[in-house]
Length: 157
Ligand code: 4NP
View 1: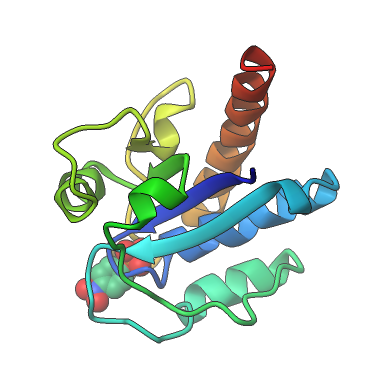
View 2 (view 1 turned 60 degrees about the vertical axis):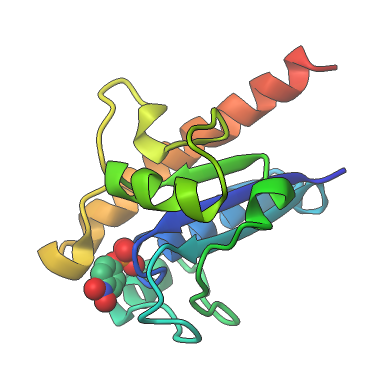
């Protein structure tokens, strides 16, 4: 069984594709691509079928990370069973995603930056324009997420 990781934001064009691509890259660097099912989705429907925002594409390109083949989709109820970790960018994503996943609450659903020393939302660069901040916070969060998953795997084996 693969370990399912779904990143969730509002539009699925800025933050969650950034986190998805960074996490995929970290997993690949460890030679663990086959062990994971990684995806991202938005709670909103405005950008379904669109590629990532130009700011996300450019920031990832600076780090030699490609966004080819990535397209926005909306979160759906079946995602709850498919994924083990449903990693949201901010509190409103959690509030919006839970009913769409058919749940009132769930330990599977948490914020990416709940895993770091100073828990917080990932600010939305669609409004702030600061894609460097998004990259740095997603990188810090994704490193912490991979460590958490490795520790979860160890404690279940
Ligand atoms: P994201 O940013 O949730 O990080 O993808 C947004 C993208 C689009 C919109 C809002 C946030 N929008 O309102 O279209």
